[in-house]
Image (tube, rainbow, N blue to C red):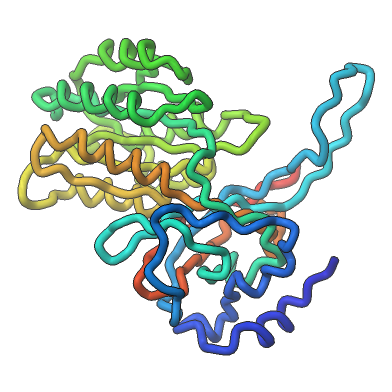
Length: 357
């Protein structure tokens, strides 16, 4: 069914949408009828105090690369040929927080406005509070000499995080990095094996943070094949210093975006003020839709891990069809905003469209 987006925009959204009114931002309420067969996510125990009344400035965000979705499950008979139809869809995972940083759950599709590459989506296919979507999590621990005195706290906090976070359908891997990467335990759900992998790591050497992040997203996340939807995230524990990489920070960020991986960073620079490394960690987290945490004591690194766990279980999933989509490998920006100015949306800033061979 062809959807007349212009008619729905002019007929349903009558108030201006802040500074994006000229850009034609579309409140997702305009596409409710296009997704009538998809029930709205039920409100969770924590709900907003009142309905949104005005639209704030846009929040930059992104979604997963549109992928081919199988229209039917593979048959069990090997002699039957499976026909799959590719559909251009974007899976957009995001979180919403109030001005005090508390996660906001229970919002509905109509509480948001969205632009994909400057245009409203053609159709919203699904909107849910996705707290139980299986996780694929990577633990990246800085093992360079600069964090030697703090490494024991990192190890214990990482193990505790995995104990609290992993559900039966989740998988995680453990990696240490200095000038090289060391995947001490590949993807598994077994906490004992992950803990052993963490305990194997030993600090020493220089720091190639950007090289390591680039390689990890390329080799562990970009190549990850699943028959069902998952959320991919990396928890990066480091001081943010880099004295050895050939890759630039922008290269590492782009690879994270290509791999559709959210990066949460936990700084090991304890103290009252931030330094250059902390700024690097903030930039990586912001660009990929994650968050940066800055413990004031090494004992508080565990709190950073706890905050990551809480955010991973407080996310929304929005699946939509973008307008004017081209499979040309280009980077497409996304602006997702909550229409209530009390709330801020946190998501990636864009995604790379797939490129046809």
